[in-house]
Length: 306
Image (tube, rainbow, N blue to C red; front, side, top):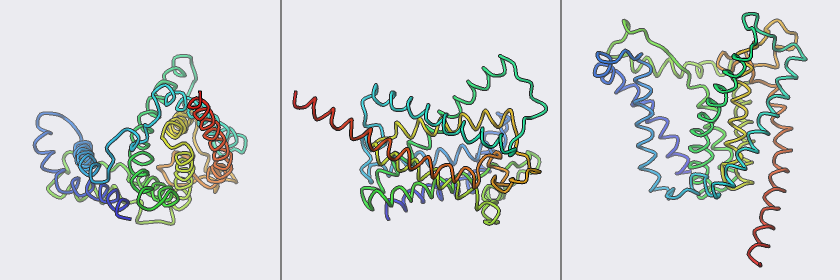
């Protein structure tokens, strides 16, 4: 449990730095750069968390590539990542297609598709997917998973990383106008950032969905022993969700609207329907990667004998 506590402490530290150092940092930076208060405070918090992670990595014996989930040779890593990306795209495309067929999502009236727009959306979505996946998988399914699994076992590591993964999705963006910034704005920013937790019933379906996705990624991480596949899967999920959010929207008038969360941060995608799909996909992916890992082990053993 100590390793898990260290990573929870990183989140608490980042929020504390945001509350305490946000306003002083804004006073120093804002006169020279026209950055919003929330942007300056959040970057300071992220920097503090990164420094803290670097410091505790040695304490938790996270001192090599494998500890962060990068144990595979690079060619094999990129191959597994590309496979995961394709699978992630396919899985998310299927569920979004089903949402369209069920009338849960409808085309946005203000969008007219063109070759330029499609290319732009594809590139932007992929960039965002890779950036999000690289950060979250390295920290959660990489460093945190390794540290917690060493101390408390694989099952607890899957659950712990899934819990943190779900929680961090509700740390939302909260903006404070420049003219309203004062000495207490850091505290106000933290309170606004955590406002979704004040009404847990309103985010329960979205939370369950994110937790289920976290478990799926955690199981794949456990099966493969690295984050190549989870990085690809995660990037594929974000890529397709980004595309869907740009060209369609959730229809609250649908009779099946309860299958999608009303939480504004979910993009009209997460909810009970995706949770059910993740359960089905998780079983299939666990079997797929178990057989894939077994096959790789046989090949490695054969190569060692020859």
